Amino acid sequence: MESHESSPDQSVVVEIRGLSVYTHHGVSAAERELGQRLEFDITFEVPDCDAVLTDRVEDTVDYGAISMLVAETATERSYKTLERLSRVIAERICERHRATGVRIRAIKPEPPIEVTVREVAVEVAHWPDDGESNDELEVEEA
Image 1 (cartoon, rainbow, N blue to C red):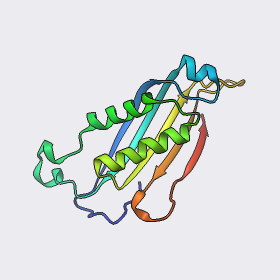
Image 2: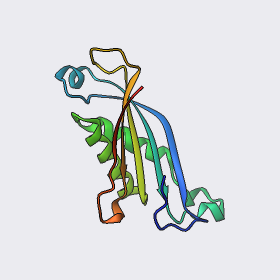
Image 3: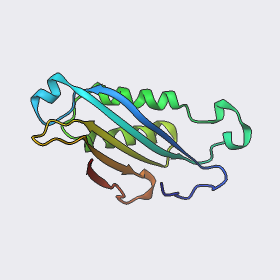
């Protein structure tokens, strides 16, 4: 993840990998009604993380709170696209946890398409303080 004007000695990049949530997102009515499991990989940067100096738990990021925020956002309403869902998650992490940049990878294992693929994934990057659009969208098939 790129560093954006953070102190190199106190900036921390946090990664949460493989967060699994049962959701109701998708283009088809069946996907939204029946639901499916999505997986999330989250990477975000927190500037001026005092825990690198203090070693105090209260000065670091609460990974459980971030995980719950992702799960709650992914289950509170239905989106047709993973892109929109990922952007909403990224915005909330920035707003509530002082993140200067967030990258969300939303993975749909065994998507309902006519050919067999292991998964499809969408990655959204969001840096709200840049003043210009740096959102990157990628769709990956594995």
